[in-house]
Length: 150
Image (tube, rainbow, N blue to C red; front, side, top):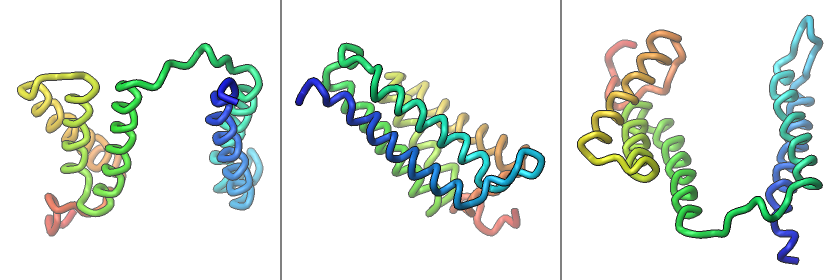
């Protein structure tokens, strides 16, 4: 049984891809000359499903690293991304982005505080300016820019 544990992740991805295929098909894929809202999700889901199916059969268990402290760091990074998404909806982009970048710079890059803090603040502001200002991607109203008439 333990020799087959490496097949769990591709199996989960295969199920996720199949569900996404069904969901995107129900949105309507349209035609190439008149694409529907589900066309791009359908293409991405198809690639995910095909890749998972391929990994299910050709993936070697020797390719995997043992679970150790680094795996916990990765889990912490994924958890911080989930927290970022929740905070992004609740209080806007800038503060959660600074916190996540700061966490990642300290956890993964092991940067000292004197470098991590300005990089996190600068990176969050740069992303804000790029997406909100230059590309006009609307972000949820945040507590920093509430009532500024954006």
